[in-house]
Image (cartoon, rainbow, N blue to C red):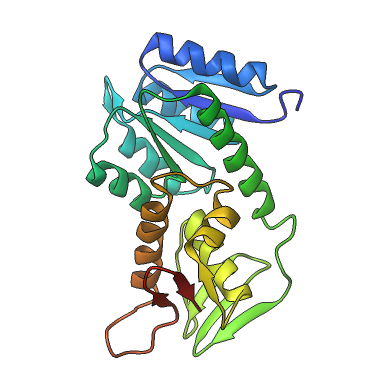
Length: 230
């Protein structure tokens, strides 16, 4: 890859930071290490990385606050790398727009696989590659594939990068039941024990933003234990 991709590593543990940087550079990436919240924020805005690996427990702030800052103006992939294993922490990070959540201790091979997957998915769904042309419409819902924008009754709905990718994929399979595994493979490129939960969190956010209510018109149906249908 010849340092094509620049990856910001926000991690206060020097041993872990050095390990990750070594792994990244061995695979041809450019690692940009940051040891705290303030340094991570500064390097994010100055370097505009292609991906961020983000620890949550930083000495001068919480990683979720940096995630909030990033998501104000960017859909850059963010992989949270944290010792926090509580499900609420994972759900919060995904709700805030994290693309993935890896718990410590972690496998070096698994982390690098997730880095490759996140970058590959980001490129595929950046709008410069295989996104379909035109628009999708359904009962007031409009998906503009070219601009990656979503509207309901002409009001724009703000989705995260991952949420848009899921909605776009379901719309391209409109009318069909798409299994959990098919969606996970399309969006993240791999599957693990937390993949279904990660999908469900994103899907709950999508349905909420689309105004899903019991007894009202809902754009996405949940085929319990199987998948989803647009």
